[in-house]
Image 1 (spheres, rainbow, N blue to C red):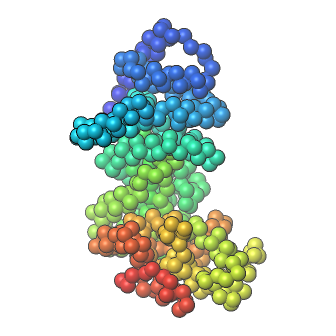
Image 2: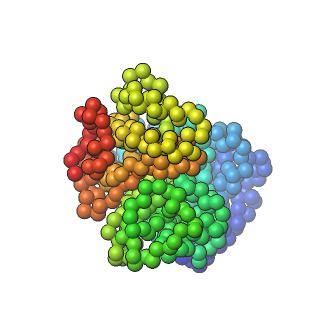
Image 3: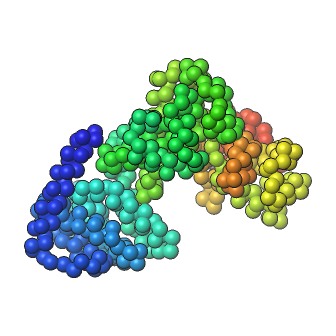
Length: 456
């Protein structure tokens, strides 16, 4: 793949450079990278001036954009929102024609006329060499601006619409990451790891180059050596309840053929600009297929997952006057969380474990967002993929990050291949959280009646 990509990349670069020389002869422009100049170039690109000049224009626009400061970029996004929406004249004619005739041809024209002009603009931006990654980075800038500028949301929706097509499953390539993977990719694995930080090269090697560990990533042909998402897998005999033994570099290595359990202990999205494009569900299912072929002894597929919203939710329940999740005794026991070193004391951890377990059962099985979804984002991901909430592990992650985000809590989600579709439909169709019997038993009697939990 890389030799073909290099050839076509060089070819596009050559076309772009030749086209730039044509543009420079035909219209001298100021070297300042201002939004107004960029908008003018965008109009030229949409008007169409031949393929060579189109590639050159796209490259020039993206080069100019890359040199812009934050304020200038926001001004450019404003122009995309205001000046590159649907062609209103064409849209009004299409609406009138469809209302009058109701024909298939009129419906097709209405569909085309309703598309914002910026979608075609983004497609033409993508003519340039390396343009796909530049557009992903552009959307990252837009996402930063959206924090304070919700009026730019329409531009973001158009990015998301196009990216969902450009990065659909048919274009993704699964590759195993090991010590023979090029160093520039390995460096990105270290940088993009979002769940359990990779401390150094020795830590990375322990995760990708030992007999009982695997790492897999999705790549896209247009983003050479840029992983989209990757998953780290531990091969074990049992379902783990804590992350420290999994990450321990001094552990005894298990021979792969003796493993019965594959543990997905870290899933990291690498490209923030592709937010909203789903990769994780495809990744997990394909890795299960891949690793099952390699190691037939595997019969159990689980995660060891963080619970990033648990600590904030628990603190809010502690402050609430009438928390349905916590009893007076729970509040009293949880007061120790206000001391900075509580997690260092074995007796404190042992006393808190049953309180955490019961509270966590309520958090997963009963607590809901305003939209009626489970509070935890990782839970929404795995449950939506058809997994089952298998086990709650108090004190599973005693790292500073684990304490801050989840008071040390971790959970296992289990993927039973025969049940994935049924669980997926139960969650998306009815909002049901499929959980194991032991998890459901953790709910206090007074809270159980509120839980939306099917019997399994």
